[in-house]
Length: 74
Image 1 (tube, rainbow, N blue to C red):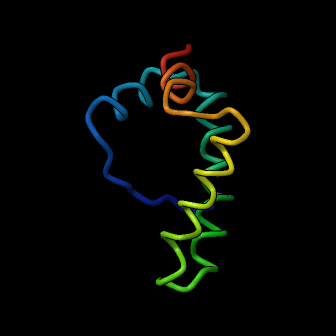
Image 2 (image 1 turned 45 degrees about the vertical axis):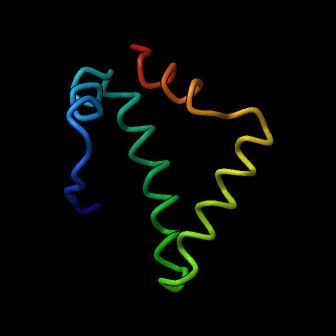
């Protein structure tokens, strides 16, 4: 596996550094899956795809509050 660098907000970076290594590995694996799907899409299809994913996630009960709770867990 290779490494990439992605710039994020300072708060997200701080939470990443303070998160349990096992949980970081899980997040990394999920991001790998999401990025694989995104890069299979044509450039003009990426944002509609992500918006559709957001809508489906919200329909299943996932929202920004839940994401914030997940990011704040240790």
